[in-house]
Length: 291
Image (tube, rainbow, N blue to C red; front, side, top):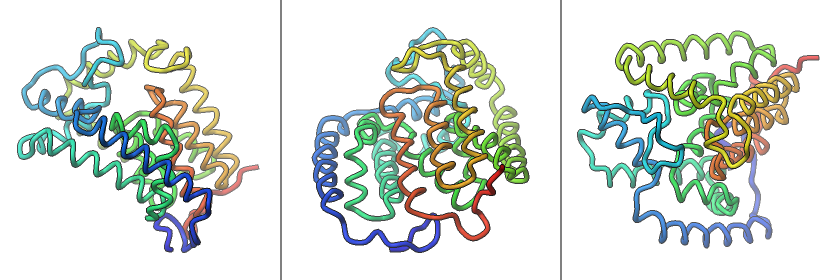
């Protein structure tokens, strides 16, 4: 089977372990679909934020706890991108679209192999992500695309959640300064346009982000976000200097650790490791080892 993220490789026949995990994943998927999919998940927060943006209402409530139902804590870019779609589609239709999108991410990360995709769902954070329907699987896919296809994919990844911005640290440590500069410049252009279109929401977002930077909220471990971000940056530097697929895995771990909200489902970002280890960079994109 052709691996879309790197050169051609073969998955081969499903091994008994993969088949066993696929059965478990299928059971978990059935449970999640039956118990959670009839109701809104985190995706409804994105929809509500987009409609509030169009109505000129605040996107953020600084006094709300991180686990407030349908609260929006992301950069305004996501709400801006989704705003036009709220004019032509219902929230129910968006929920269906988002659910299909997440399933598509798993399928692509699994190398377009149904058995491997179901086995991936046996990884509990992935099942939890399908239950709450956040954006971590999208970040996982964008991370693989950025490492295997083009630096451009780092920009939407960082626009969803700030942690993928550690790619700049990784690229600099790997000696890939041109790519790092392109990511910074492209991100700055998107940021500038977003701020021009919605300066008020950006002021509110910065206030909320700074107010919670030293907080231990939004995570199941009592570690302030600034400490996790610093730890992620350190891992990204080591990963960049490593300069191989193991280094890429380190970057995925760094992005996961630096995720603003570190609940159990956030670890579904680690699913990016599967295609990274089972493929190789396209010609000319092998990270340079720095000694």
